[in-house]
Image 1 (cartoon, rainbow, N blue to C red):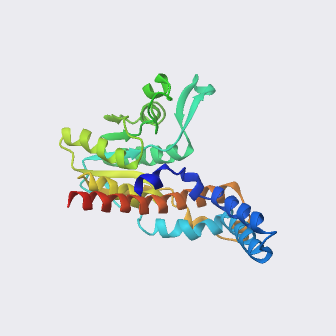
Image 2: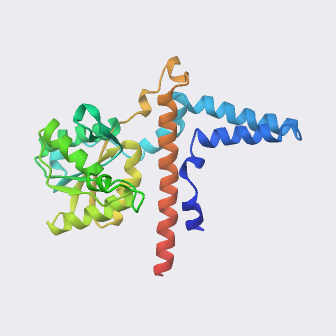
Image 3: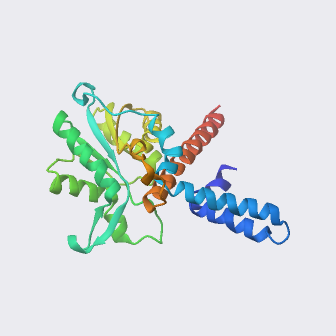
Length: 267
């Protein structure tokens, strides 16, 4: 069952694709069942408009952000290292000589990691492969990963040294297992974990399952920014937040199912 769910492209479950699919279903049944068709298509259109606003996105963003809180006094957290997780990247950026660079989501994480490193003096690990493998991935893309791009940005743009670069992971679970293996080699057990506030609950659970003690160091709290009449205007940013938040909620549910399946198999 889990393998079947995993084979379905994730965007089918996420807005806006799932909402367009709902509207299409409503239109398809409209002629035979007019009332049902109007209700289904109308619901899809209303949800699309609602979740395209930053105020509407808050319906999903706020519960995720309530699962964590800003880190206070990082220098007293007792951590031995800072781990910052990859996000996306811009491939072949022409202004950087066709080199891959971190995207704006990854840069927000890197900036906060640099801030924490200056406050604590702790060594930094960056984690992130390319999210794909196999014959369809070019050798040069495998060679220069998201983590490599992040490490370059930290060193060159933020003046922060990077001690470990984890390049094998394809998702948050692998971020955790591969990073933990690197850190244990150097006796590191307790970390400051840097990622977005919306991603923190899932990331923390994965790293704790990998055997590390985790001090959450979330950044990019967006829920409290969605206020005023302008927040109800549909926008690309509103849909981006909705997509990300729904993705994280589904990810938490998926990791929970997979964890229960592994525990049942072990039992």
